[in-house]
Length: 324
Image (cartoon, rainbow, N blue to C red; front, top):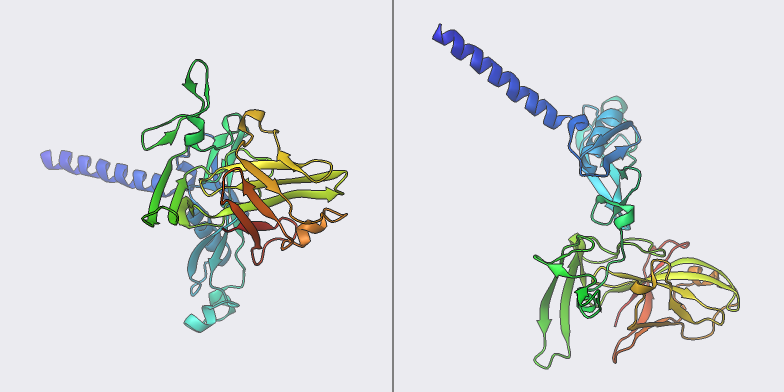
Protein backbone atom coordinates (compact mmCIF):
# COMPACT_ATOMS: atom_id res chain seq x y z
CA UNK A 1 0.00 0.00 0.00
CA UNK A 2 2.90 2.33 0.71
CA UNK A 3 4.00 2.31 -2.89
CA UNK A 4 0.47 3.35 -3.88
CA UNK A 5 0.60 6.24 -1.40
CA UNK A 6 4.02 7.30 -2.70
CA UNK A 7 2.76 7.10 -6.27
CA UNK A 8 -0.29 9.23 -5.47
CA UNK A 9 1.83 11.82 -3.63
CA UNK A 10 4.28 11.91 -6.52
CA UNK A 11 1.45 12.33 -9.01
CA UNK A 12 -0.07 15.18 -6.98
CA UNK A 13 3.30 16.91 -6.79
CA UNK A 14 3.77 16.57 -10.54
CA UNK A 15 0.32 18.00 -11.23
CA UNK A 16 0.94 20.88 -8.82
CA UNK A 17 4.34 21.61 -10.38
CA UNK A 18 2.88 21.52 -13.89
CA UNK A 19 0.05 23.87 -12.90
CA UNK A 20 2.53 26.31 -11.39
CA UNK A 21 4.66 26.23 -14.53
CA UNK A 22 1.58 26.77 -16.67
CA UNK A 23 0.49 29.67 -14.52
CA UNK A 24 3.91 31.29 -14.77
CA UNK A 25 3.90 30.93 -18.53
CA UNK A 26 0.40 32.28 -18.97
CA UNK A 27 0.16 36.07 -19.59
CA UNK A 28 -3.29 36.08 -18.03
CA UNK A 29 -1.92 34.97 -14.68
CA UNK A 30 1.06 37.35 -14.59
CA UNK A 31 1.21 39.54 -11.51
CA UNK A 32 1.50 43.25 -12.30
CA UNK A 33 2.39 46.14 -10.04
CA UNK A 34 -0.42 48.27 -8.68
CA UNK A 35 -1.94 50.46 -11.37
CA UNK A 36 -0.35 48.50 -14.21
CA UNK A 37 -2.43 46.70 -16.83
CA UNK A 38 0.61 45.37 -18.67
CA UNK A 39 2.14 45.46 -22.13
CA UNK A 40 -0.45 45.44 -24.91
CA UNK A 41 -0.12 44.35 -28.55
CA UNK A 42 -2.68 45.11 -31.31
CA UNK A 43 -3.17 41.40 -31.94
CA UNK A 44 -4.84 40.82 -28.56
CA UNK A 45 -6.41 42.55 -25.58
CA UNK A 46 -4.40 40.22 -23.34
CA UNK A 47 -1.77 42.09 -21.25
CA UNK A 48 1.77 40.71 -21.08
CA UNK A 49 4.37 41.12 -18.33
CA UNK A 50 7.04 42.68 -20.56
CA UNK A 51 7.55 44.30 -23.94
CA UNK A 52 9.49 41.25 -25.10
CA UNK A 53 6.70 38.88 -24.04
CA UNK A 54 4.13 40.98 -25.91
CA UNK A 55 6.29 41.07 -29.06
CA UNK A 56 6.98 37.36 -28.91
CA UNK A 57 3.24 36.64 -28.65
CA UNK A 58 2.62 39.00 -31.56
CA UNK A 59 5.19 37.15 -33.68
CA UNK A 60 3.66 33.79 -32.87
CA UNK A 61 0.19 35.10 -33.77
CA UNK A 62 1.05 36.91 -37.01
CA UNK A 63 4.18 35.34 -38.40
CA UNK A 64 5.31 32.31 -36.44
CA UNK A 65 6.15 30.39 -39.59
CA UNK A 66 8.50 27.45 -39.82
CA UNK A 67 11.42 29.57 -41.00
CA UNK A 68 10.59 32.94 -39.42
CA UNK A 69 12.95 33.95 -36.60
CA UNK A 70 11.94 36.15 -33.69
CA UNK A 71 14.48 38.96 -33.17
CA UNK A 72 13.20 41.01 -30.25
CA UNK A 73 11.74 44.38 -29.26
CA UNK A 74 13.23 47.78 -30.00
CA UNK A 75 12.21 50.20 -27.27
CA UNK A 76 11.43 53.67 -28.58
CA UNK A 77 14.34 55.94 -27.57
CA UNK A 78 11.91 58.82 -27.05
CA UNK A 79 9.35 56.78 -25.11
CA UNK A 80 10.55 53.74 -23.14
CA UNK A 81 6.93 52.68 -22.57
CA UNK A 82 6.45 51.88 -26.26
CA UNK A 83 8.45 49.66 -28.59
CA UNK A 84 8.52 48.05 -32.00
CA UNK A 85 8.66 44.30 -32.54
CA UNK A 86 11.12 42.67 -34.91
CA UNK A 87 11.24 39.32 -36.69
CA UNK A 88 12.31 37.91 -40.04
CA UNK A 89 9.78 37.41 -42.80
CA UNK A 90 9.78 36.73 -46.52
CA UNK A 91 10.60 40.39 -47.25
CA UNK A 92 13.29 40.65 -44.56
CA UNK A 93 16.20 38.23 -43.97
CA UNK A 94 14.18 35.00 -43.89
CA UNK A 95 14.87 34.02 -47.50
CA UNK A 96 18.58 34.80 -47.08
CA UNK A 97 18.87 32.89 -43.82
CA UNK A 98 16.79 29.81 -44.64
CA UNK A 99 15.94 29.84 -48.32
CA UNK A 100 12.29 29.63 -47.31
CA UNK A 101 9.35 30.84 -49.33
CA UNK A 102 6.28 32.93 -48.65
CA UNK A 103 4.43 30.21 -46.77
CA UNK A 104 7.29 29.15 -44.50
CA UNK A 105 8.68 32.64 -43.87
CA UNK A 106 5.42 34.56 -43.66
CA UNK A 107 4.81 38.07 -44.99
CA UNK A 108 3.33 40.00 -42.05
CA UNK A 109 5.36 42.97 -40.81
CA UNK A 110 5.71 43.52 -37.04
CA UNK A 111 4.09 46.45 -35.27
CA UNK A 112 4.15 48.14 -31.85
CA UNK A 113 3.60 47.21 -28.21
CA UNK A 114 3.04 49.64 -25.35
CA UNK A 115 2.63 49.79 -21.59
CA UNK A 116 -0.93 50.43 -20.40
CA UNK A 117 -2.00 51.67 -16.98
CA UNK A 118 -5.21 51.56 -14.97
CA UNK A 119 -7.44 54.64 -14.79
CA UNK A 120 -5.84 57.27 -12.58
CA UNK A 121 -2.31 56.02 -13.33
CA UNK A 122 0.21 57.18 -15.93
CA UNK A 123 3.26 55.43 -17.44
CA UNK A 124 6.53 56.99 -16.35
CA UNK A 125 10.05 56.80 -17.75
CA UNK A 126 11.02 53.81 -15.63
CA UNK A 127 8.59 51.53 -17.53
CA UNK A 128 5.96 51.29 -14.82
CA UNK A 129 2.76 53.05 -13.81
CA UNK A 130 2.50 55.71 -11.14
CA UNK A 131 -0.60 57.23 -9.61
CA UNK A 132 -1.25 60.46 -11.47
CA UNK A 133 -2.04 62.39 -8.28
CA UNK A 134 1.34 61.35 -6.83
CA UNK A 135 3.38 62.40 -9.88
CA UNK A 136 5.50 65.43 -9.05
CA UNK A 137 8.34 67.19 -10.87
CA UNK A 138 11.68 65.57 -10.10
CA UNK A 139 14.16 67.96 -8.51
CA UNK A 140 17.82 67.78 -7.41
CA UNK A 141 18.05 66.71 -3.81
CA UNK A 142 20.92 69.08 -3.09
CA UNK A 143 18.51 71.93 -3.78
CA UNK A 144 15.64 70.30 -1.93
CA UNK A 145 17.72 69.93 1.20
CA UNK A 146 18.28 73.68 1.25
CA UNK A 147 14.59 74.49 0.95
CA UNK A 148 13.15 74.09 4.41
CA UNK A 149 9.48 74.33 5.31
CA UNK A 150 7.23 73.04 8.07
CA UNK A 151 9.56 73.96 10.92
CA UNK A 152 12.69 72.62 9.31
CA UNK A 153 11.27 69.55 7.53
CA UNK A 154 12.82 68.94 4.13
CA UNK A 155 10.57 69.20 1.10
CA UNK A 156 12.12 66.41 -0.92
CA UNK A 157 14.58 64.47 1.26
CA UNK A 158 16.55 61.44 0.13
CA UNK A 159 17.23 58.35 2.23
CA UNK A 160 18.85 54.98 1.75
CA UNK A 161 20.32 54.10 -1.65
CA UNK A 162 19.46 57.09 -1.90
CA UNK A 163 15.75 57.18 -2.70
CA UNK A 164 13.81 60.43 -3.08
CA UNK A 165 10.98 59.97 -0.61
CA UNK A 166 8.44 62.17 -2.40
CA UNK A 167 8.67 60.31 -5.73
CA UNK A 168 10.35 56.96 -5.00
CA UNK A 169 13.08 57.72 -7.52
CA UNK A 170 16.50 56.11 -7.00
CA UNK A 171 19.34 58.53 -7.71
CA UNK A 172 23.09 58.12 -8.08
CA UNK A 173 26.11 60.06 -9.31
CA UNK A 174 29.53 58.94 -10.46
CA UNK A 175 32.64 60.99 -11.25
CA UNK A 176 34.63 59.38 -14.07
CA UNK A 177 37.47 61.88 -14.37
CA UNK A 178 38.63 65.17 -12.89
CA UNK A 179 41.77 67.26 -13.28
CA UNK A 180 43.76 68.17 -10.19
CA UNK A 181 42.46 71.74 -10.22
CA UNK A 182 38.86 70.59 -10.74
CA UNK A 183 38.35 72.77 -13.82
CA UNK A 184 37.63 69.78 -16.05
CA UNK A 185 35.29 67.10 -14.72
CA UNK A 186 33.44 64.23 -16.42
CA UNK A 187 30.61 62.81 -14.37
CA UNK A 188 27.39 60.85 -14.80
CA UNK A 189 24.01 61.03 -13.09
CA UNK A 190 21.27 58.44 -12.74
CA UNK A 191 17.57 58.75 -11.84
CA UNK A 192 15.21 55.78 -12.04
CA UNK A 193 12.12 57.97 -12.60
CA UNK A 194 13.35 60.79 -14.77
CA UNK A 195 11.47 64.05 -15.31
CA UNK A 196 8.31 63.32 -13.29
CA UNK A 197 5.48 65.78 -14.01
CA UNK A 198 6.14 68.29 -16.79
CA UNK A 199 3.74 70.08 -19.14
CA UNK A 200 6.27 70.55 -21.97
CA UNK A 201 8.46 67.43 -21.78
CA UNK A 202 8.48 65.62 -25.14
CA UNK A 203 10.69 62.52 -25.01
CA UNK A 204 13.20 60.61 -22.92
CA UNK A 205 16.64 62.23 -22.72
CA UNK A 206 19.05 61.20 -25.46
CA UNK A 207 21.76 60.01 -23.11
CA UNK A 208 23.52 56.87 -22.00
CA UNK A 209 21.92 53.50 -21.39
CA UNK A 210 19.71 52.54 -18.45
CA UNK A 211 18.87 56.01 -17.17
CA UNK A 212 22.41 57.44 -16.99
CA UNK A 213 23.44 60.78 -18.53
CA UNK A 214 26.71 62.67 -18.70
CA UNK A 215 26.58 65.83 -16.59
CA UNK A 216 27.10 68.09 -19.61
CA UNK A 217 24.11 66.70 -21.54
CA UNK A 218 21.29 69.21 -21.31
CA UNK A 219 18.32 69.06 -23.70
CA UNK A 220 15.92 71.79 -24.74
CA UNK A 221 12.65 70.24 -25.93
CA UNK A 222 10.18 72.41 -27.82
CA UNK A 223 6.46 71.93 -27.11
CA UNK A 224 3.86 74.30 -28.58
CA UNK A 225 5.20 77.13 -30.75
CA UNK A 226 2.93 79.62 -32.53
CA UNK A 227 1.98 83.28 -32.56
CA UNK A 228 4.37 86.23 -32.68
CA UNK A 229 6.86 87.73 -30.20
CA UNK A 230 4.20 90.21 -29.08
CA UNK A 231 1.49 87.55 -28.68
CA UNK A 232 3.42 84.30 -28.15
CA UNK A 233 2.18 80.79 -27.56
CA UNK A 234 5.51 79.12 -26.91
CA UNK A 235 6.48 76.55 -24.30
CA UNK A 236 9.49 74.29 -23.83
CA UNK A 237 11.16 72.04 -21.30
CA UNK A 238 14.78 72.09 -20.23
CA UNK A 239 15.76 68.49 -19.43
CA UNK A 240 18.82 68.32 -17.20
CA UNK A 241 21.25 65.37 -17.07
CA UNK A 242 20.27 64.56 -13.48
CA UNK A 243 16.80 63.49 -14.65
CA UNK A 244 14.96 66.71 -13.82
CA UNK A 245 12.97 68.90 -16.23
CA UNK A 246 12.08 72.57 -16.02
CA UNK A 247 9.17 74.14 -17.93
CA UNK A 248 9.47 77.59 -19.48
CA UNK A 249 6.94 79.81 -21.25
CA UNK A 250 7.57 82.84 -23.46
CA UNK A 251 6.20 86.21 -22.37
CA UNK A 252 5.10 89.05 -24.70
CA UNK A 253 8.30 90.60 -25.96
CA UNK A 254 10.22 87.32 -26.13
CA UNK A 255 11.44 86.82 -22.56
CA UNK A 256 11.38 83.30 -21.12
CA UNK A 257 10.06 82.75 -17.59
CA UNK A 258 9.42 79.56 -15.59
CA UNK A 259 6.08 77.91 -16.34
CA UNK A 260 4.35 77.43 -12.98
CA UNK A 261 1.60 75.11 -14.24
CA UNK A 262 2.99 72.25 -12.14
CA UNK A 263 3.35 74.56 -9.12
CA UNK A 264 5.26 77.76 -8.41
CA UNK A 265 7.25 75.92 -5.76
CA UNK A 266 8.99 73.81 -8.45
CA UNK A 267 10.01 76.79 -10.62
CA UNK A 268 13.79 76.98 -11.14
CA UNK A 269 15.62 79.82 -9.41
CA UNK A 270 19.13 79.25 -10.77
CA UNK A 271 18.45 78.87 -14.50
CA UNK A 272 17.93 81.51 -17.15
CA UNK A 273 16.82 80.81 -20.71
CA UNK A 274 17.27 83.35 -23.46
CA UNK A 275 17.07 83.51 -27.23
CA UNK A 276 20.17 85.12 -28.74
CA UNK A 277 19.32 87.15 -31.82
CA UNK A 278 16.08 88.44 -33.31
CA UNK A 279 12.94 86.36 -32.92
CA UNK A 280 11.07 85.59 -36.16
CA UNK A 281 7.67 87.18 -36.66
CA UNK A 282 6.17 83.68 -36.88
CA UNK A 283 7.31 81.68 -33.86
CA UNK A 284 6.26 78.39 -35.42
CA UNK A 285 9.27 78.63 -37.74
CA UNK A 286 11.52 77.98 -34.73
CA UNK A 287 10.44 74.35 -34.80
CA UNK A 288 11.45 73.88 -38.42
CA UNK A 289 14.72 75.79 -37.98
CA UNK A 290 16.33 74.23 -34.90
CA UNK A 291 19.79 75.60 -35.73
CA UNK A 292 18.81 79.20 -35.06
CA UNK A 293 20.95 80.84 -32.40
CA UNK A 294 19.84 79.79 -28.94
CA UNK A 295 21.69 79.81 -25.69
CA UNK A 296 20.97 78.33 -22.35
CA UNK A 297 22.49 80.34 -19.54
CA UNK A 298 22.45 79.66 -15.83
CA UNK A 299 23.01 82.10 -13.00
CA UNK A 300 26.53 80.84 -12.32
CA UNK A 301 29.72 81.54 -14.32
CA UNK A 302 30.94 79.45 -17.28
CA UNK A 303 27.52 77.92 -17.86
CA UNK A 304 26.57 78.76 -21.44
CA UNK A 305 25.64 76.09 -23.98
CA UNK A 306 25.23 76.70 -27.73
CA UNK A 307 22.42 74.71 -29.32
CA UNK A 308 23.02 71.78 -31.65
CA UNK A 309 20.19 70.06 -33.52
CA UNK A 310 19.81 66.31 -33.31
CA UNK A 311 19.81 64.61 -36.70
CA UNK A 312 16.46 63.04 -37.47
CA UNK A 313 14.54 64.99 -34.84
CA UNK A 314 10.82 65.31 -35.42
CA UNK A 315 10.02 68.55 -37.29
CA UNK A 316 6.98 69.06 -35.08
CA UNK A 317 8.82 68.45 -31.80
CA UNK A 318 12.57 68.81 -32.37
CA UNK A 319 14.94 68.13 -29.52
CA UNK A 320 17.82 70.55 -29.08
CA UNK A 321 20.91 69.39 -27.23
CA UNK A 322 23.12 71.92 -25.49
CA UNK A 323 26.78 71.09 -25.11
CA UNK A 324 29.38 73.18 -23.34
